[in-house]
Amino acid sequence: MTAPTSRTATLLTPPDLHPDMELVMRVMPMPKDANGNGDIFGGWIMSHVDLAGCVIPARIARGKIATVAVNEFVFRSAVSVGDLLSFYARVEKIGRTSITMHVEVWAERRPSDPLLVKVTEARVTYVAIDHEGQPRPIPKD
Ligand SMILES: CC(C)(COP(=O)(O)OP(=O)(O)OC[C@H]1O[C@@H](n2cnc3c(N)ncnc32)[C@H](O)[C@@H]1OP(=O)(O)O)[C@@H](O)C(=O)NCCC(=O)NCCS
Image (cartoon, rainbow, N blue to C red; front, side, top):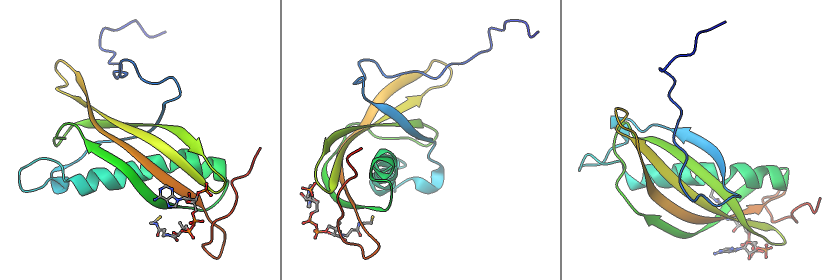
């Protein structure tokens, strides 16, 4: 049996997170992802939000989906190299062929005394598509 240790390190959970929010992805940006200011490039964050946002819609749609719109995107705080980014997502609306997601990105930084900061919030809409790339109905069950 392993003796209890004080060296465990549980990752932080954001306070007041909407109960429907699910953790869908974690990633740590590297120096190659930085812009001229040394912060993480906004386009890098946007592409990861797009990836994180599609995890749940792809399951609900049970097949191919495409991003049709980024309805809202707010960079609340700069992201730094080495921040541990956690992407949380929840379904905001399911339409006939589309699913709109709310995505939040939280950065865990300063490992010596961890701090959690909400860095980005977005609303992104995905459409279920068929083999011809045309919209198809979201399965009901
Ligand atoms: C996604 C695509 C197939 C949709 O085709 P379309 O003919 O424009 O489809 P529609 O006008 O019927 O709209 C389909 C759904 O998207 C929704 N939609 C369209 N534009 C939207 C917008 N700006 N914001 C939110 N929802 C939108 C519609 O309301 C509809 O939803 P509903 O059926 O649930 O009511 C087509 O626009 C496309 O191929 N776009 C390129 C996708 C792409 O390359 N994405 C990047 C890589 S994944």
